[in-house]
Length: 94
Image 1 (cartoon, rainbow, N blue to C red):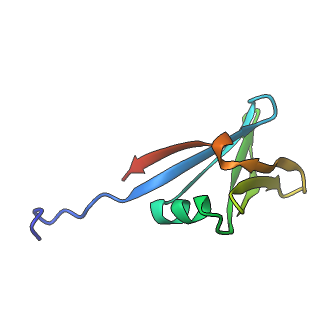
Image 2 (image 1 turned 30 degrees about the horizontal axis):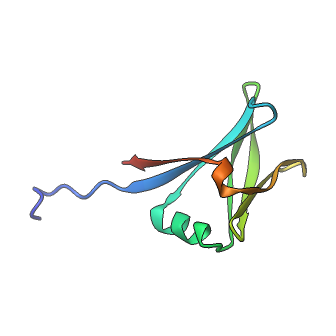
């Protein structure tokens, strides 16, 4: 390998949502390619973890038509059809 045997770092997009007066949140990591497709309106569903007052619970992220919804396993709607602009988005190298 031309780079001395080292592989290129994997690059992900970190997507974080905050709700409930800012005291609850969830973060997922997805590929840059997947994020571009979501921004173009592609539907995508992903499991993750939500955090509230030092406790963790499973949540489901749903992206449809450039909007995001997050629901916990008890059916509580944490975020309902909000714009992708409401999310905190960053790039992570591994």
